[in-house]
Length: 342
Image 1 (tube, rainbow, N blue to C red):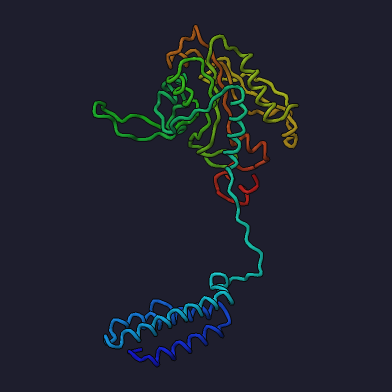
Image 2 (image 1 turned 135 degrees about the vertical axis):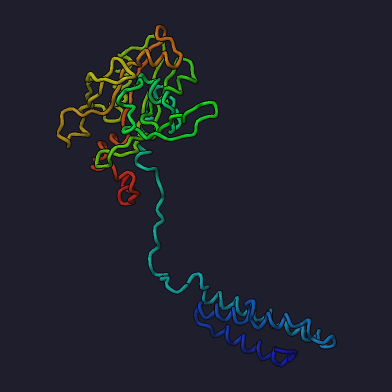
């Protein structure tokens, strides 16, 4: 623009006229950039004040400031009249209804765990956790699963190759835990009786993935240790659970079974309205038993003084039964069409 005051006057006249006649927000944004933008006319004139001869600088500066103020006012007035590009950006139809923002919620597996844990917490069980990478003592030895037992085969576990400490000649055998019973062992090691805990968590087994099997799934196990606990106490606790979770009319039965870490052991079958669609009179839902004395000895408890019971169930199985889910793989595919149902 040089130092021509007439040019400033003409620019003001043109700018005011342009802002007064602008018809939409997009055109207004273009005008703003042309006049008030970082490389616009007004900025150029204001920036040129320093180069004006001293005797002319006062008059030029006054005209430049008037231009800036008047053009800014004209822009603000036009903006109030036609809106901004943020409200009328190309491709946005303001007449369309807004999009609903989906609110997240807990995964169905988490919901199932929380429901089960809450029932046991009501009768004094506290929730505990433990590491998913375990040593052989906590995963096998302390649970009365000796060396050579088929459950310890490499084909049935995820063993990890770890470096051995300097004083050992071979690597320390570690594995991804194959059961949440390991949490029970660690809890008993760190607490004196009485103990009453519920332990949910992920477990890992190298199963072929299909509709009912997965290499990673969830278990919930419970443990109670005290003086003079007996099988009747176990029965009372599990009766409360199945009626609270599966319905007050639920019937249950204990069927003899074998587990290395409990003796006697049993599986629990139930008959309830929730599973009538399966057309089976009895459905197995969990395993249980009195804690084997060898397990108590392994953690330093006196089996002559203390007794206890334990139970465990698969979370995916419970969720699949309750919600009529036919494929365990649905839990891990992150399909929102599936997850959004719960």
